[in-house]
Image (cartoon, rainbow, N blue to C red; front, side, top):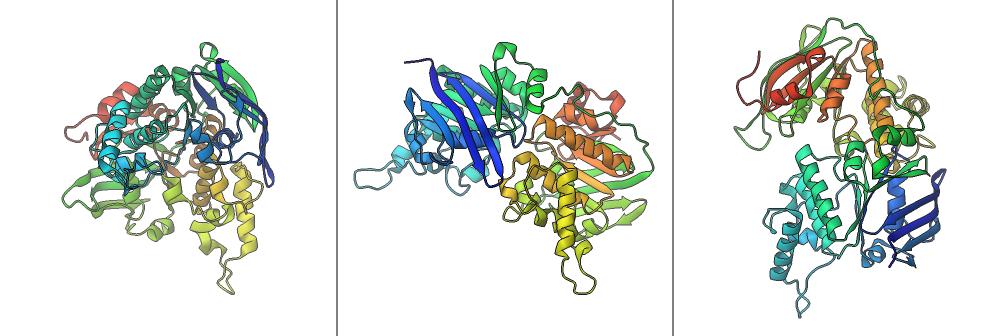
Length: 513
């Protein structure tokens, strides 16, 4: 038995109009945690889809040798029978089925009569859950547990298939720090049990912490494989983007003007649980040319604040006042918000930001169709729509051969740019960004930070919500902290430290005035 469990040689994969991978090589040692990093659209997920049979043998060129034998996988079932299991960034779980049912979906435990043996199913599920540290009843519906626990269900599901090579695509992108640490600890446990892991992530510090070796891919080509002893964030970034990023956050010089947006005594109740207060008398201001950060732990009310302000998209029994340039406005619907030049980029771009069945052009024009109406017919001027979409494809550097390409085929970073393009086309005065860089690479992050700078340089007001404290501090002029639905502090950037922000983010007492 050799030390190498996987060798992918000269892998080339083409889609219509796009070369996704060209002559890519990957070698993974048995029992190691091997990381893959690269910019969005570099080809990381495509490479793993080839390995797992999502892109079957014959649709690519090159050779895969797995455990000493050439692999010819024509489906996911083929790869799983050889002990290769992939967990995609978008979890493949049914929210309406129990944890046990999800773990054994497609791999059911039958009795002698060909019926599902529920006692065996729940007992084996409980044992797998114990191995991954998931303390829940196996009969609990998956839809009622958090994303961190759902990741553990996916890993338990992989263990039920006697996994030998586990592939994880952005496993911690949507997790908080506690859940991320638990997951990394679980990967170390699996490594100790002899399971080989391949992990894709944009969190470079996380990769350096967990991986034995890291392969960098750029523009569909293998750049280098780095052992853990030589891996630094600077070296990884240089390999990913082809240049040094001396500053993670672009410098900006801008004048902060008068108040543009003010919120007073904003109180929001849970949409389905009467009496549960989600936001309690929240007040804040944003001035022209200013980036205001909102920092808070998961469950603090950050997204609830953004969505409720944007046309009452979240919550019930909403009260309080909103003012734009000193005039009170009532943003009771999304149309009201768009009319008042307020835009909101959701943290969940696939659910709230994009029409995944449509192309880039249709998505970019979606919020500003009135600007494209013909004054004669009232129909959308499709020539103008094409021009608008091409403009934002170019200025936002959306990597796609045409604006007629479906957004579902884009990488996460390019999908995020399409969402930004949609709202930039409405020319907003107030832009609310909720986790704008979640799940995207360091190069795309820099582009988005630069875009924020351009917005404020034109006198726009920007609110940024982020769970990454270095990011909030790197791009904000002032930071509000939220804890349990209340504003607990307002910190000028010159006085902001991670320690001070964390203290305010965990504060439970009365609001700080």
